[in-house]
Image 1 (cartoon, protein in one colour):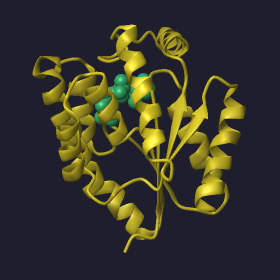
Image 2 (cartoon, helix red, strand yellow):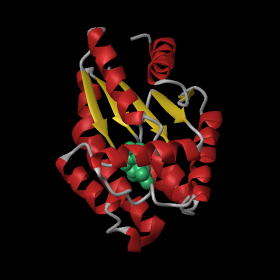
Image 3 (tube, protein in one colour):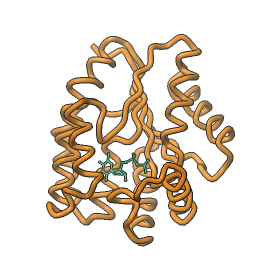
Image 4 (cartoon, protein in one colour):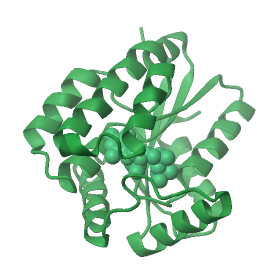
Length: 213
Ligand code: TYD
C-alpha cells in the first residue's frame, strides 16, 4: 500500500525548480519526514545514462517521438526502482520534473500527438500519479536568461532543449498552464519571478494546504 506522498516540480527552463525542490526537501525533513530527492530524466543509474544521451543532443535524430519514448523508458525504470518503493515505505518523494515535462516538451512544443503522450504516460506512470505538482511559472525570456547565467557560471553549454527558439519555450509555458487548469486538484501554479525565498514560501504554503505535512 502507498502511504508516502509524491510531489513533482515542473516548469520551463531557468524557473528555479532544482533549488526549490532542494529547499522543500529540507523543510519536509525538518518536519520529521523521510524524503527522497530525485529528478527526471534520471534518478537511477540507467536513467542517468539515458539522461546523458538525451540532454547531450545525441538522441535528437530520433525526433520528438523517439525522444518521448526514451524519456518514458527512463521514467518506467525510475518509477519501478525508486519512486514506488519509496512511497510504499511511507517516504515523501520530491521529483524535479516528471511526466508533465513529456507532455510539454515532446507533446505541445515537440509536436507528438496527445493520444500518444497519454499512451506513454499510461505505461510509464500508471497509477503513480503525483499527489501534488508545483508548476513554477516564469516568462520564457526571463527563464532563459537565468539558465544562461547559470551555465555561464559553470562554463556549461546549453543543453538539448535550452537551445530551442522562443516559440518552443512559449509553447511549453502555455502547456504547463493548461495542465494546471485541467488538473486543479493536483497542480498549483507558483509565480517563479519572485525572489527565491518568496517562491519557497509559496511552495510551502501549497504543500501545507494540499498535503498537511
Ligand atoms: P534539467 O536539468 O531538469 O533542466 P532544467 O534545469 O533546465 O529544468 O534537464 C532536463 C531537460 O530535459 C529539460 O530541458 C527538460 C527536458 N525534458 C523533456 O524534454 N522531457 C521530459 O520528459 C523530461 C523529464 C525532461
